[in-house]
Image (tube, rainbow, N blue to C red; front, side, top):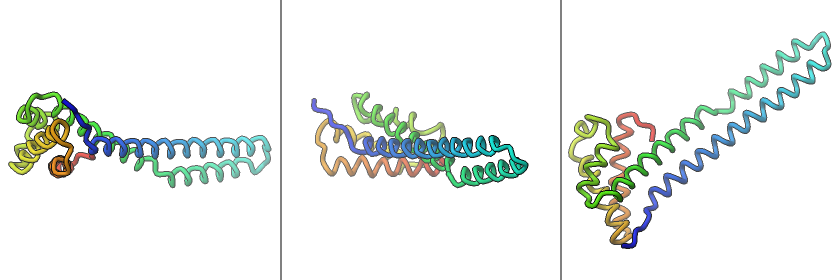
Length: 171
């Protein structure tokens, strides 16, 4: 049996990679800022003039203002959301691939993706989306990597993701 990978998981991985690179860029910017201001403060201390405390205070204030402008917390939130999305998509794909049939995969998927009580609160539309996702992914990976199977996977996953966001999940 020829098994194909679905692009949705690759896209989620690419989002995670981009988010990771942004966090790395922002953290490196903060490190460089600390280093640069550390050198400026050391130079002010070396000069040891009577204006040194005021100069250092001005440098520390300038450094702190620049730090605030580097929005590291947003980068961390984006990375966390990308990581959670990638994790849940990976778990969903693994679940479908591990089970022998779509019904068993969908049952397990419901338990993995949703917290207790969530799926019941959402109703039949989301439950059907979970079944469609399992059917579509199984068909895509084992029968035919067709546009129709791809769309079935994507549409059903969009319903699942929207429902998770409705519960406040950052994915």
